[in-house]
Amino acid sequence: MSSITTPDDEATDGADSVAVDATAQADGATEEESGDAYTFDDLSVVMGTYNEEEAIETVLDDIERVTDGRAEVVCVDGSSDRTPEIGREHGATVIEQEPQGYGVAVREAVLTPDRPVVVTTDCDDTYPMERLPDFLDAINDGADVVSGDRLYHGADAMPAFNRFGNQAFAALASLLMSERVHDTTTGMRAYRREVVQDIGWTENTGLSAELLIRPLMRGYDVREEPIAYAERLGETKLDPIEGGAAIAKSIVTVCLEERLRRF
Ligand SMILES: Nc1nc2c(ncn2[C@@H]2O[C@H](COP(=O)(O)OP(=O)(O)OP(=O)(O)O)[C@@H](O)[C@H]2O)c(=O)[nH]1
Ligand SMILES: [Mg+2]
Image 1 (tube, rainbow, N blue to C red):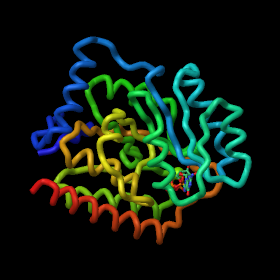
Image 2 (cartoon, protein in one colour):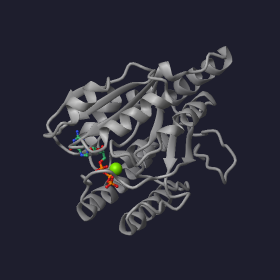
Image 3 (spheres, protein in one colour):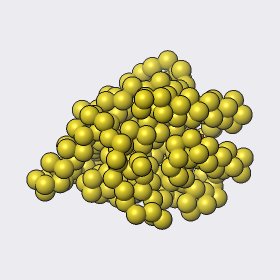
């Protein structure tokens, strides 16, 4: 039994925890017992940014408004346009990196913050930053990972091909994990920092799926949270066919590695 919970399911505790899980659970318990809940001052919102000058101002303004300017923002940037300048003008920490794909950028982004709660998003105005308080609440409620489920509300703004692909990825991962998940490739999640620090990440285009699958299969408290999903500003950076094949391969590889790790 693992520990994913959805609006349809009852909460279940991870029963297959290993030593590292116990640490994560213990930290969570200490947090709750002390009544010292995390606030926006404990939050870092991180993203890969690659030629997103059409969207970055909107995304950063939304984060600023919703968190009263208290969340830290980290952008790992590979742009050749004005994205990094706009990011810095709006108070983000911008780390420059040659463009090497989604996962190379986002891995650097999640590993950078010192703050205890790390939220990922895309820099394309698709994800609802007004839900940041709910994600933080779920962490304060004991979740280790809170994963935004775009498909729950239908994701009408998503191209039909991508929607079908994302449903297929979730079905594949669910089968291989023996645990139902609904959106494996979402870009909006909250993590306790120790989860992203304690696990070794290997995937690039498939990093989003890996960031869900490894914690789930190690018994962390992973919860899916239905979110709205909006149409993208600017050009996509993902080739649906090539990217889709890479994601499917990552799901199979990571699920098998995690199963073998249990022996
Ligand atoms: N630094 C960096 N960021 C990247 C790279 N590839 C993608 N990104 C960023 O990662 C995020 C996700 O990329 P998207 O193009 O939105 O991919 P997607 O969400 O699968 O596709 P859409 O549904 O079209 O949005 C965006 O903020 C991109 O700017 C890269 O090679 N380097
Ligand atoms: Mg996107």
